[in-house]
Length: 438
Ligand code: GDP
Ligand code: GDP
Image (cartoon, rainbow, N blue to C red; front, side, top):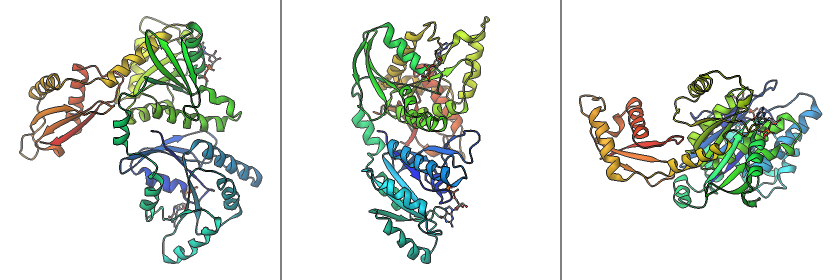
């Protein structure tokens, strides 16, 4: 399930402060477009197991009055198109401004839920003043202080009410439908070309399912006797001519495509290398428990010597660390090299992600690994792992039953993960490990 909430509001009302609070310690993806006054931010928020994408539309706001207003209108428009819920933030310290009114006019026309959030309500006096905002005419009004956090719990309860908790979603999604692959990457890396090459060479499209979801194009394929869906984010270029907006759209679309996919095919331009934004997209896919295949396109542009590919892959993996058990494929859409191999790899990763290791094999292998190297003794007590079980989730997850679950530290956790990866093939797939009290 993909649920996206956008925070809109004029500058200085406290959007960024709220954003950071809702994300707590989690690292935001910052859309670092050069020459802008402030960064747009994207992140993954989690409220009692209800997970959603959060966008702070802050972004670019030039100073001239008229451009200023039109920029803000554009932000609101994009938020309305792309988000499922909208937090409309206003500031009690300034009261209702003309710009607030203008934004309210646009927001009143949507059928999507709008939450009016009156910020900086730090004390009782301001609480009284905040009632002024009822006059904007929205049903959902919240008085909060982003700095202290007061009121944010109630707001989050409301905002996440339409969301199904992650665990329930995982249960219902299990084994439903065809493998879904998303082709994502920066503009101009060759995503459309790849899609066209796949379509053109083999007339294998079964049907075009557009409108399955609002915004990405789903194409149903049959290739290698396998059926799968390709989720394409390339088509969005037509929506806007402006670079700023295009990047905003494309990152939101990429985030949503990740949500819909089982495996993300992240396309890079060999000549340009991996960008900071590619890395954040990669980490997001991993955090969302999706399979990943890295496709280094335009390999034809690279002058090659004996070890070029090997060295390139090594450098790339250094940047992907700590999760490096990821397939990297060098392709050229132009010369049609290895493009079908890309689909084969995605199918392999899909299978890896679905792998269910029989309990007896799992225990045999992992208890041997535990016997070969025990978890370090903590505060004088030996840590014993007695039993391992794979949980019935779409993302391979393993519970290790132990006498002291809280005393097992990251290095040992990493050891167990590496052992799982060595003994069973989970290439391209994030693996989750839990320690539970025996
Ligand atoms: P944005 O431009 O809408 O993202 O606003 P910022 O998050 O950058 O905040 C603008 C200013 O308001 C900063 O100086 C914040 O410290 C301040 N601010 C944000 N939230 C609160 C709040 O709840 N109470 C008070 N008193 N100040 C706040
Ligand atoms: P998208 O924005 O990611 O969908 O990228 P496009 O598919 O539109 O490709 C951007 C540009 O890269 C176009 O001019 C393509 O012809 C070119 N291109 C795509 N694949 C290759 C490739 O394998 N090698 C080279 N040299 N150029 C490519």
